[in-house]
Length: 114
Length: 111
Image (tube, rainbow over all chains, first blue to last red; front, top):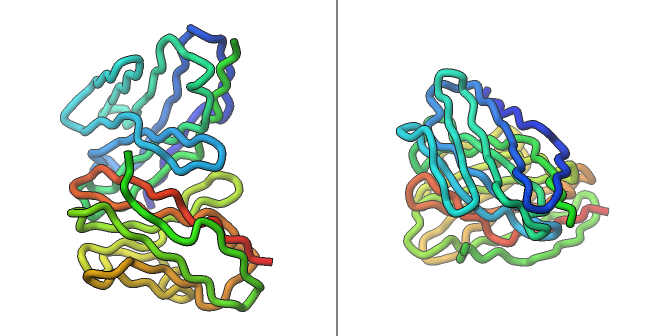
């Protein structure tokens, strides 16, 4: 079945530096790739997503890149702040469309130190 | 921000007991998903519905869970006979197109 690999599992950066998380997927038919941020005791919140018709998307300090040939996508958080500390999950939808499940990576615990 | 409502927020059951949780999807979202997030933060897809019909479900859900999404009523997910390994966060998400928005979850503890 579909698998999504996410690395690193733990990431520690200093405030104001960049943080990068990488994911790879198996199913070449996947065409939707969201990123969720989850704080302790909370639900996952969508922070940015990218579809297969794009290679790059930016929302303020969040950048996502998609390389369909390599089946790889990544999240880059620029100018990190302590409030960015959380679990981050990448996901891929099996075949796109509203009726397909998300397959999640195992998460990255990001800690931003002052 | 997600407008998906889930109840109860916490549920404690003994082994062998039924455990039922509910979800009200965001208005206008025809597709509802249930996921299980275990203590290692791993997500497992359980089942999804479009309107009242099941689209996909995994084996475990078919054998051990009862789920429905009636019109004009909350969706529900019920474990027929709880096991210790069912202790997890159960997340409901709804979607209009491909973007899924999660509710706050029901945290189940099976003693």
